[in-house]
Image (tube, rainbow, N blue to C red):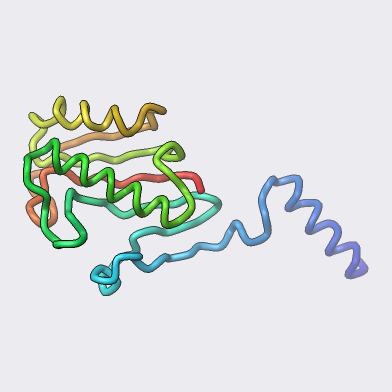
Length: 148
């Protein structure tokens, strides 16, 4: 088969599949937070037009401490951190399609949910569960998957 035919078939296949040739690349993004660049994980992994965010807690990234005020304050800060990462990578909260929420105490579910609803009116798919311990003694951790 001639090279022109192979190229034409390749591009036609890509067009019909609805993806760009580079959309299959997997990009492991370094953190945009200078103090987190040495972490043993990526803040975001990008693949196939999606952003897979590592979990965020209610940490003020300027002071590197958890915000005070309990589950409500930590939930707000946590989601604001997610928002900042998404915006840094050309996305936004309204493009979140899946959330995984980990609460230190399942009794915080109602208070967390009240804050969560304000940020996610599109109602992305979600899994919520409780765990006995979270990093930096946080009350909540959330990771998301968003379209770019």
